[in-house]
Length: 253
Length: 330
Image 1: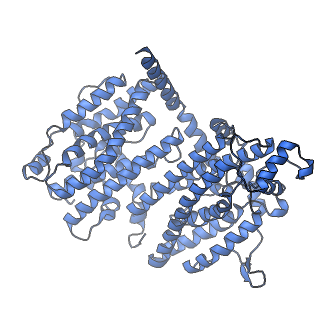
Image 2: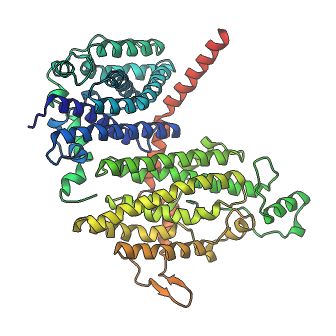
Image 3: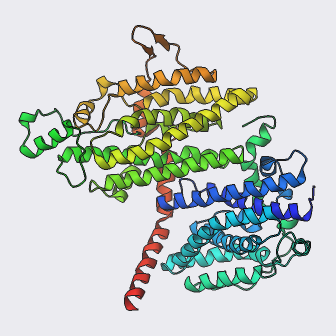
């Protein structure tokens, strides 16, 4: 299994997370609770596929062996994917979908805010552009978490259940990581040491408004997106998403 | 347009002399190409016909997202995925502003959607056909949106102002979709492997006749057309529009290097139009009755979406009410 240099792996982590999150949003087509949400979810999904493409293009240039953004998206196996475990989880109901979205948006928001100041100009530029989009994504998902958490008895219960389902995958959003520390020491990206606290602060703030209780810190082991140790859900997602490129490797689309 | 067989509720067209003063003034405005606006007086049947037609059109945009949803998770490249997602988003948008145009006539969006779900309102027959390979995403854009545009271009001049204005906006986006759809097919034919070329031909074979059916029954079988045309809701007959679509599509088909499954299709020098074979009307009426290949699945998906989302909409309302109370108390 190919392991790329730390920076490329980091770019794949960003690109893969955006793409897989968008893929899950695509699954909602024609099934959203309201027409406005069909538009909202597609809107966010479009932004994320665009972001994935930008990260992939940079990663592909670094890999420099003829790989392009599409090869990265459609020709890698699940063990090579670096997306957060959170985003590969099934959509469930609208509460689960929105909880995943919110946790991911909050992580993206703070991460991109930091990356905007990266010495690596390419990263800084992609981050700055993405941050404009993600600022809107976070506002939207925060509002939904608040509405659903502090809506009806049923919606509150569904939100509690949703948090219970996805919370354990959030350990990746708050873990300190040697590879990223090395990247900041080599000057490519700013130090991300504040990211866990900032993420948690946003979650706390929105949960308070939503009358939701924050669970204890998740105790998860074995699984790790950084080493491609995914949940079983990613494999079937990729089988669907990559079907045409895999079935017709010589085709041009 | 995605409206077929819109009932007008009238048996014969009245002459100006037979009309009361309000109706005569209304018809004179229409004859003078002055737009009717929401607050203007209008005959009850004109209002009802428009509600039926616009809601049918809006429903079609929404149901029409489903055959594309079948492939958006399998789009072959990031570029194609982005294009298809943007197209689906546009369709949701078209649905929204068509429902808004319809609401200016006093209709209620939820009520009209309920009619769709209970099978009392129609949507275009084309969306009851399955999408079976990636080329369908090209063929739907090229043929289905293409047929819709032929219908909608005259509707930009339709007599009801809000509908006419919605159409102007919809048409711009639809022609973009059509070009994009054609480009998907052209790329597969010019740069693709044999399997891709086979997909394109297969998609056209399946979608050609259903696309022609989008224009509705032949003029001889369209008892409502004359009234809709007198009201200038409709500007051309079904057969006129169908012919126009065929005439403009065949040269594009030839450029692709593909064929349509119609042995009778040939250029008629004398008429200056293509002749074409008999449409299988039995199939058309069966699909309209609900017996098409995907009618059940399409409606079930839409019903489930609305039912499964009920708690979300209720929560949004409950939360908004709480906020309002808090603000009032503060």
